[in-house]
Image (cartoon, rainbow, N blue to C red; front, side, top):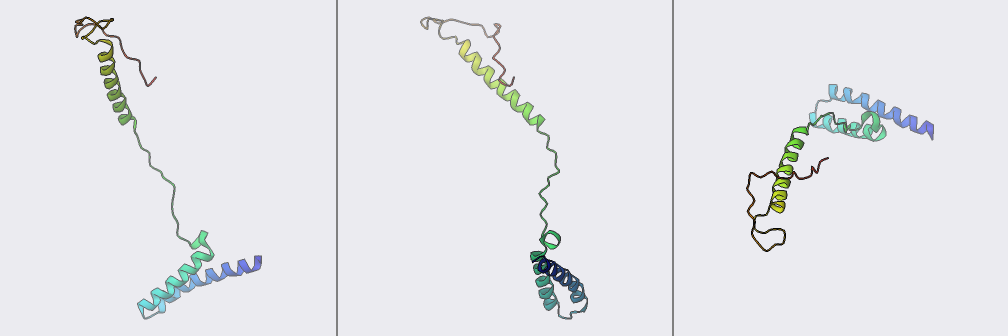
Length: 117
């Protein structure tokens, strides 16, 4: 079985060598293309690690998302701060919910908790 595998691999090497001969000697380009494609296909099936299609799955790109993350944090903090102010400084009712209470906009406000910490 091991000898058979070695013979098949040797055959694929021989067929690959024939590709150059065919390209150099065949007069009819369509016939040459067919013969070359058949040998290339067979070699790729018999020895895919050497003659098969190579798909590179390695990605060597560095993506910096720190700027986008900082902007998202700032937008989220603004939304949370605005919602927090609306809830804690509602000028329409007091603590009992019965009488209106006026709170100046420039009054010191509690800061909302930082959700990113």
